[in-house]
Structure formats: structure tokens, C-alpha cells
Length: 241
Ligand SMILES: NC(=O)c1ccc[n+]([C@@H]2O[C@H](COP(=O)([O-])OP(=O)(O)OC[C@H]3O[C@@H](n4cnc5c(N)ncnc54)[C@H](OP(=O)(O)O)[C@@H]3O)[C@@H](O)[C@H]2O)c1
Image (cartoon, rainbow, N blue to C red; front, side, top):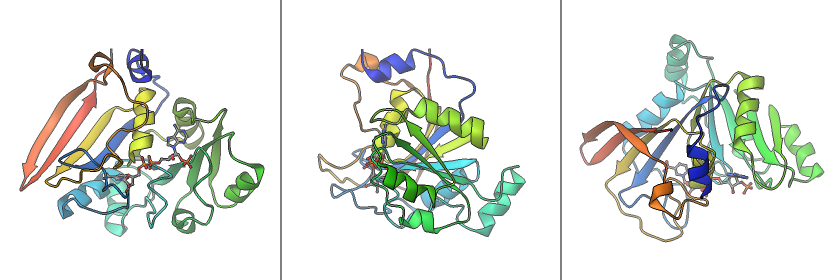
């Protein structure tokens, strides 16, 4: 049985945060073109959705592959900070990055933006030198044993130590796939933009191991579907047994 199927046959631990994904894909399901460069390709309305969803999260998380560029996972400005306070959340969201091998450099842009702590999820693969360097810029570090991040343990640390109840994951494909493998995703906000990227190496909504049999797939319930001009705005919930 595949990892996804194994995980989805168990209910989620109630101490874990509510996890929602926000993803924009091309009509052929890609997160970016084949060169994997970050390119905003969805509408202004979708960018607004991205910022609004951040106002509903204690923390926003991404994988190292996503935050290598000029990305800070921040609030998006005073208007959204006011909204956060109105919704009973802290003015600034916490930020979480996953870097299993330590490929995310301590001088990355996200660490230079100091409005809220950046929490780092990593593994025992990283060197002591790297850890010493990252300790200087990170608000906290969780180290999984072995070569893969154990997201269940890491998310229990995020909820237990950092009081994160609502965690928004903004991709990319590898981290999304890992969260599905461990049955950690509750809802998916998916925007489908009317473009085709193609490319067999382009990232998709959920990469990683995946399943071999349709029977082992993660099952979803469609909660909402809106078409605005050429774009589709969908909300799915993960069905658990
Ligand atoms: N359209 C959208 O909504 C959207 C959103 C986000 C990203 N993107 C695009 O997606 C692409 C990036 O996606 P990606 O899949 O390459 O990268 P990613 O998921 O952002 O990050 C992958 C990295 O995260 C770490 N990681 C994730 N899961 C792990 C696990 N289980 N154990 C250990 N480490 C883990 C690893 O870091 P180390 O390499 O350091 O070990 C891995 O290489 C970019 O092209 C970006 O522009 C698009």
C-alpha cells in the first residue's frame, strides 16, 4: 500500500493544526513552467485571495524550493494586518520553511525580513556548521531524525511550542506531496488559470512519491466552485475515513 493510502486510512491527531493549502495551477496542473522559475500567472483576484487566506493563518509555510527567491511569506501590508487583528490573530503571521538538506541559505531573503519569526523544519542530514548559521536567523528549529522531515512531529512542535492552530501551506509540489503522504491536509484552495505550461519537469500541485493505484488516491469533496472570467476558484476538503 502506498504512503498516501496508509496515511489517509487514519483520522488526524486532534493536537495537530488545521492545515490548508493554497495553490494556483495552470489548466494542465502545473505550479510553474518547466524551468521552475517563480512566475505569478494567476489574476489580481487570485493574488487577493492569497493575501486574504494569509489573514486566516497563524503561520504560513513553504518548502525551500519556493522561498529561494524574493518571497517573505508576510502579511502583505497594513490592510491585511488590520484584518488579522479583527479576526483575533496576531498582527503578523509566523513563517515556516522546510529544508531537509539545508539547501535554504541563512542569507536567503526570507530571513532578512524580520517582522516575525521564521521557523525552520529540517533533518539530521544538516551539518553542525549549517545549524549554527541558521540558529542566528531562525526563530526556532525542528530537526527530524533521518533524511526526511517528519511533518507530523514537526507540526505537533508548531502547535505545542508555537501555538499554531491554523497553518497555511503555499507549496510547492514537494512539500504539498509530503503533507498528503502524512494525512495532514484538511482543505485545499485551488485556482485554475486558463494557461497551459506543459513540461514533464514542471512542479505540480502534489509531487513526491504519489500513489500507484487510483484506489489509494486522496479523496476530496468539492466544497465550492466559482468561475470568474477565465479562472476557476475551487475549495476542496480531504475526506478521511
Ligand atoms: N503556483 C503556485 O501556487 C506555487 C506555489 C508555490 C511554489 N510554486 C512553484 O513551485 C516550485 C517549487 O516547488 P518544489 O516542489 O520544487 O519545492 P518546494 O515544495 O517549495 O520545496 C521543496 C524542498 O522543501 C524541502 N522539503 C519538502 N518536503 C520535504 C520532506 N518531506 N523532507 C525533507 N525536506 C523536504 C526540501 O528542501 P531541501 O532541498 O533543502 O532538502 C525540498 O527540496 C517553484 O517553481 C515555485 O515557483 C508555485
